[in-house]
Amino acid sequence: MKVAEGLKIINEGWIHKPKGFRVKFHKQTETCIEPGLSPPAEAAPFTSDVTAWRYAWKLWQSTLDEHKTGTPGALYNITVVDDQDQPARFYATGKFEMYNTKNIDGPIEPSPEKNGER
Amino acid sequence: MENEKEQFNFVQQNTETSVTEIPRLQLLGETMTYHGTEMALGLVLLIVGLLVVRWIDRGLRAGLLKLKLKSQYVMTVGNVVYVMLVAMVIMASAVQLGAKPLNILRLITIITLVITGLLIFLRPFLPSLPFKTGNTVKAGNLLGKVEAITFINTRLRTFDGKTFFVPNRQILNDIVINYNYTQTRRVKIDVNVRYDQDLLKAKRTLEAVMTADPRVKPKPGPMVYVLNLTKDCVELGGRCWIDNKDYWVARCDLQEKTKLRFDLEGIRFAYPQLDLHMKTVALPDDDLKSSKPNRLRDTDYNELNNELNNEEMI
Image 1 (cartoon, rainbow over the protein chains, first blue to last red):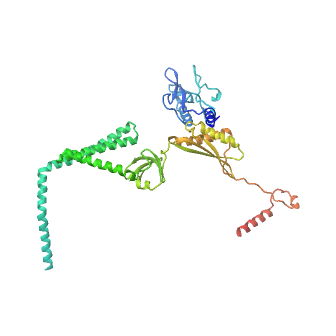
Image 2: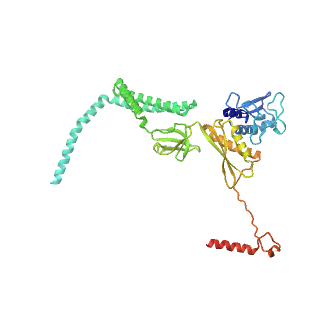
């Protein structure tokens, strides 16, 4: 095996290198709870997971009042996903984390487990 | 007698001057009589035209900036339009003064051709600035973004919001770093770990942090080197390549992630420290029987102090 081939294997298999990050959440509207992404799928994602997690945390903090009262605008199950829509680990803890978890009927991805881990 | 002569000469000179001035004044008067209206109109046209051109120029640049075009395109388009409008105003006022439009057009064409030719031939010999508008440069002690370049100076906006007008002559005489000349930049993540830590684990962790970041280029890939074995720590140097536009944020993010990942992995950073080792002094047998066998007696301290003082005196 040539070194170039070996390096290709390493690049593909050693460490997952996402192309970008998005914040995924469920948003309370007037009538229902609908899933959402920020930035949206058609826009360029964040290139930094640090930025994405900080953005997610700020979204959570900014919608605490709506969450308490259950008014439209409340955000649930806020987490960071990569470009493949797979959950990203929080770089500070090395775990999958989710802010403001709430069980919602229907498919929820990523599904939170206990203590925000999975 | 001498005073009378001087007076006579003065009067004679004045008379001669007034005699030569009269035809000129008459000529001016005639010109003003016949062409005064055209001249005044031409002057008014020139002044008003230049004011209108300036107003149009400002509006055009503001409009183009609102379209979110690149500032260098806005500047180029603005300059071209401005020069054309000024030429038109000058032509119009010249025509008003009585010049033939065809002659003016020829004159402008000749001037344009001469300037273009001179620029083409002299371009290799003309000093040019090693950057363009929008580039991030370091000139002398100033680091910032180039906002505008004129014949005289360069407008540089530093990252703390100050605007500097640097003379081009000074820039040409100084070392300039243009951070946009190459697409990528190398990021250095240097960390110091303690000697009792797992070196290979530290290397792997640092490389993993860099590799996992989307902004880090796969080629050339990130590398971690053992830079130095100092008296306090092992110095590790992480090196990776990142796009210029992402450099600052990516560097800060990588530093943050490195610190947190090392904490998670239980790898302890080194910090400046000094280890003190208490040295016991061998005491005579009689002293061993005393109640403080492992401590220096007062007399020993005194002796040590005396020795130190003697050394200082020497």
